[in-house]
Each structure stands twice: as C-alpha cells, then as structure tokens.
Image (cartoon, rainbow, N blue to C red; front, side, top):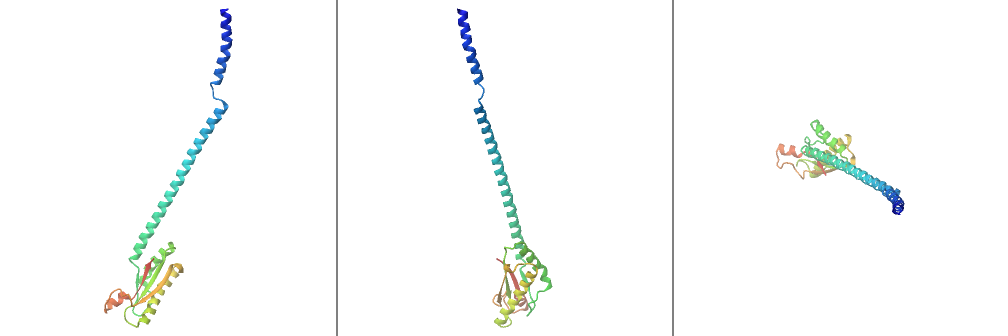
Length: 188
C-alpha cells in the first residue's frame, strides 16, 4: 500500500512538475512584449541621436552665420575709415586715387546686398548756396555712378547734397576748402 501511495503520489507529482517546468519559460506574449520594448528603446535612442545631430547642425550654422556677420562688421568698420572722396575745386569728377577706395566699397556692397548707403555730397563755402547744392549733388551722383558701374544695386544707394552746409573744416584757408570738397559714403 505504501508503494501504491508512493506511485500515486509520483503519478500526480510528475505531471504537476512537468507543467511547472513548462510554464516557467516566457510565453509568446511575453516574448513579443519584450521585443516591442527593445524596439521602442532603440527607436527612442535613434530619435535622440537624430535630434542631437539636428541641434549640432543648427549650432554650426549659427556659428557660421555669426562669423560671417562679424567679418562683415569688421570689413564695414575698416571701410568707415576710408569713406571720403575728395574733389578738385568746382569739379565733380572722381580722382583716380580714389578708385581703389570705391572699389572696396563696391565689393563690400555687392557681397552684402542688404546693406545700404547714403552718399553725401559737400562743397566748400565759395559760390552761391544754390550752385553749391547742385555741385554737391553732382559729386554724390559721380560716386553713385561709379558704384553702380561696379555692380552695386541701385536700391542700395541713395544720394543727398548738403552743399556748403556741413563743412569738414571751418575756415577760409585752402586747406579748409579742400577738406570740405567731398562726397562721403555713409552706411545705414
């Protein structure tokens, strides 16, 4: 009897243990869930890497833009130190010594199409106010024509004449007169 109880117990225990052993592994649903979790983590990691790349590209583009703006500002500052073209008495023709200065302004303006300038024409105090306004305008227009011929867009240039109203140097000496006979390229 004891043997028969042992056999009966064994007959019950073996299938139970077999069932337990079989059920201890992950089910198909659990495996699918795990695969989905891993795929979601990989997708999130890839998306984060792509976002990091996009941010890196944006930062590099911003740096390049800032460097370009700084270089343009430095070039503009350099041009500000050579913005005056001087003229002979009662003349509105540009002297050849100022061609290189105007070429630099033209190159800068062509590269920076959003930049605008006002060309101010000036004269010395000799002559009538009406004549000096007209002469100052002819001087400013001479500079404008030179820049236009060098490729600068007309929309970037405006002209104004002050005549004798704003002398560079006050006085009645030849030096004062020579400093006042000018056209000035003013960046806006």
